Each structure stands twice: as structure tokens, then as C-alpha cells.
Image 1 (tube, rainbow, N blue to C red):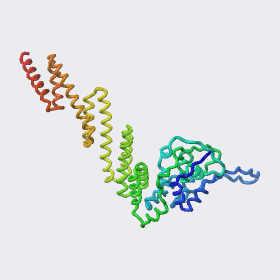
Image 2 (cartoon, one colour):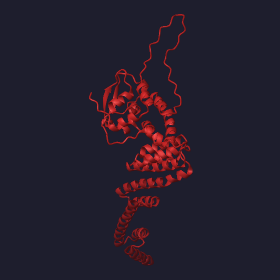
Image 3 (cartoon, one colour):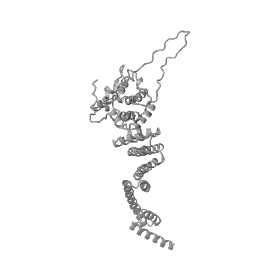
Image 4 (cartoon, rainbow, N blue to C red):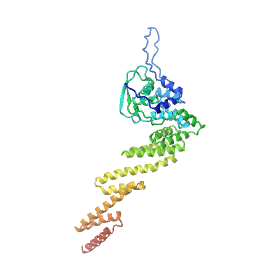
Length: 382
């Protein structure tokens, strides 16, 4: 199989890796199949030869995070990455590993893929370097293939390789993580301050989904400060609006409700405006369906309720105003028909509705007065 050379940017990142990370990626994923059980003598005690699961020590450094990911200890790795990012918010490596943990692998890598056969001696980091030009994608590649622990990947299996990441992208800047650590080493920060800085940087780069995932994980771990909670609320509103734009208003509201459970009352208040906006969009959708079904009075009530929730939404206000005009004209025309047929009670009822909807509609007011006066005269004759 012909292999693409790694992009210049990815080569730069690989060169920037501390030597310990390179050695760890190259060596830690060797597959060690269980040896067959020996046949015990008749009088010898039977000793289990089942391989013990490796014990994972809570990682504290990036090499230890890689070791934990290699063993499939995702929770321990995520917890350590949050602490690392809190102290080094611009650590490209930590953010990239956290993205591989938190992002759906199909979203991260795409569905289109090729297939390679894992050869004896292959590790996921070697395959990621060879096929994608980026050894750091080893854990995302593991998740993409449903492999829980990269270290225990056996040879001979078919491995899916995402086509989207095979494309070289020499224009994508990748910063030297080692240089970032030095530049960012400005002393101990208050807990949560680094996470807020990292999230703000991601938001500034347009990586809203990753910022939201980072802040959500920090909130669940109890590591966010006030700035982090505020950013989480704003990122949640942004994510919810994107989900609502896909027609999934209920999912969007659920996301805001779930986020509200992770933050304190002051920051939770920021979600209210976003929640009102989403509820207004949901009511707008219901109003449109009612209008299409010919239920204009129901549609107008829904539009007006939506406008009250989100008074700054010019589109909802415009739809409500247009529908009000259509409904008023329709009611007036129906009232005229009843009036000409001497069905005064029905005409009066319709014009009273018009009066409530459009008090300034003079023609309807005149006809209403005539109808009331005529009915009064007719009642005198009775």
C-alpha cells in the first residue's frame, strides 16, 4: 500500500514531542498474548496463570496519561488531563488527547475509511504514524475501531483507517507544545483558572464543541472557577442553538438543563436567556404547524407567546404581526357574510374578536356598532 508522507505541520509536532513521549508511544503498545496454562502434576497445587489486569496509577504527567490511555483507563487519563490543562492551558498535546477522549470518533474522523491488517509487532501509535502521519492519533484510532485498550490490540485484525485524516494539510499550524509549556509556566494558578483560559482560547478559535466538552468535564470534576462556569453557560447556549437549528429543540433544552445542574446559581442565571430563546423557537415551530393546518387562532397565540419569551426576535414578531393581519381580515370577511344573511349574533361575535385583535380597525368597529344597534331594534319588536 502506498503511504502518504506526514504533513509538514504534523512532522513539526512530532519533532516537538519530548523524547520520553516518543519512546513511550513506540514501546508501550506491544501485544503480549497469554501463554498456555502448564499441565500441573497430580500432586502439585493448581496455580492460576491468567494474566493480571495491569494496575493503573493515577497519572500526573503526559507520559503517564499516554500509559493510562494505552491501558484503556479513560477516566484516570481524563482527570489527569484536566489538571494538566488547568496549570498549562495552552498545552496542545493535553488538549489533543482530551479531544480524542471526549469527541465522538466518527465526528472526529469521518465515516469513510480504508482497511489495513494489523501485522505482528504493529502498535496503534505506529499505525497512526504510518497511515495518518500522526502518532498522537493512536487513541482516537482505537475508539474509531472499538478497541478499549490499545496495548491489547492483537495482530491479524482488520483496522479501519479514516480517509479524511489521510489527507495532508500543510497549512494547519501546529505549535511546539514544549515551547508552550515554557512560555505558560508562570507559576501556580488558582484551581480552575487554567481551564477557563484554555476554553476561552478554543472559543476564540471557533472550536466551540471542544470548549464545551472541556468545560463540562471540568464542571463534573468540580474544577471550574467562576469564569469557567460563565464560559460553560455561554458555550452551552451556543451548542444548544446549533442543535435547535437542526430541528431538535427538545434536545437543545435538555442540554441547557443538564448544564444548569453542573454550575452554581449565578452562572445558571445566564442560561435563562438562552432557555427562553430556545422555548420561543419551539413555540414558533408549533405555530408554523398550526398555521399550515389552518388553525390561525392557535397559531397566532403560539407566535405571540414566543414573541413574549424572546422580544428581540424580529422574525417571530414579524410572523405574529403578519398572521394577525391575515386573521383579522378573515374574521371581518366572515362577519360580513353573517351580517348580510341577518345572522347578527355570529357577526357580532366575529367583530368582537376583530376588535380584540385590531382595536384600530375602524371598518370593523363601524359594522359592529351597526350590528349591535340592529339587533337591539329587532329585540324591541320581539
